Amino acid sequence: MAVDEDVRCLRKRGVGLALGSGAARGLAHIGVLKVLEREGIEIRAISGASMGALIGGLYAAGMPLAEMEKHALAVTKRSVLAWVDPIPPKQGFLVGKKIQELLRSFIGDVRFSQLKIPLAVAAADVLTGEEVVLRDGDVVDAIRASISIPVVFVPVQLGRRMLVDGGVVNPVPVDYIRLLDRWAVPVAVSVLPKLERKQVEKPGTVDIILNTLDIMQMRLFEFRRAEAKVVIEPDVSFATGAEFWEAREIIARGEQAAIGALPSIRKAISRLPW
Image (tube, rainbow, N blue to C red; front, side):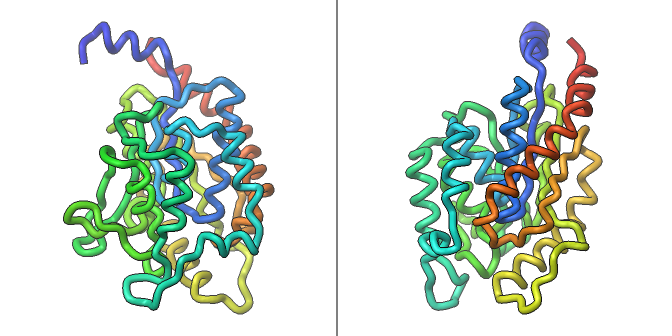
C-alpha cells in the first residue's frame, strides 16, 4: 500500500467487527450494530461465524438494521417451523434450503466483491478439519455454510469442500479483521453463554447439540480473545440457542453491552495514528 493511500485510509478511522456464533443469541449483534450506527462509529470491516456471519453478511450487503430487526421481532415459536425442511437423518436433520431462500430474498445474488463493507466468513471443512475463510464468491452460499450446525443442518459443498458451522473452529473470528483492514480497531462481539446459564430440565436433541457446541466454543474463544482491542459480551445467557422468539430482549441486551463498551471503543480509535 502506498503512503498516500495509507493516509487516506487513516482519515476515516473506525472498527472491524468480529461477530460471534451463538444461534438465537446472535440476534444481539443487531443491538450492537444499532448502537455503533447511532453513534456514528465507522464499521470498516466485518467477520463472522455462524449467526454472526448471517447478521454481518446481511449488514455488509446493505440491509437496513430497522428491516433486520423487524424480521427478527416477527419470529414466534410457530413461525420458526416455517424455516424447517426436515429429511431422514443421513448428513443432518435439516436441508437448510428454506433459510437459504429467505436470505436470498433479503439480499439477492450478491457477491463478496459487491458488498458495501468488506466481509470474511468462517467455516470448517468437516472432511479435513481445516478452518476455511470465505471471502469471495456468493455471499448467501457462504453464510449458509457458516451456519451449518453439525448434525442439525446438512453440510454445504463449495467446490471440493464440505463445510459446516464456522463456530466449530473459530467462534469469534477476530483474527480475520487484520486480513480485511489493518487500520480498523478489532472489536469482538461474543454471545457465547456463561456457564451459569439457564438449565433445561429435559433437553431435546437440538438443546444438547447447541449446548455441547457452546462449551467447545467458549474454550476456543479464550485462545483468541487477546487479538481484540475491545470485547463486547452481551448478557444473553437467559436464552437458549433455539429461542429466536426472544429477539426483543436479546437485541436489547446487545444494545446495553455496546453502550457500555463505547468508552473503550472510542479510546481505541483515538489511539490510531492519523
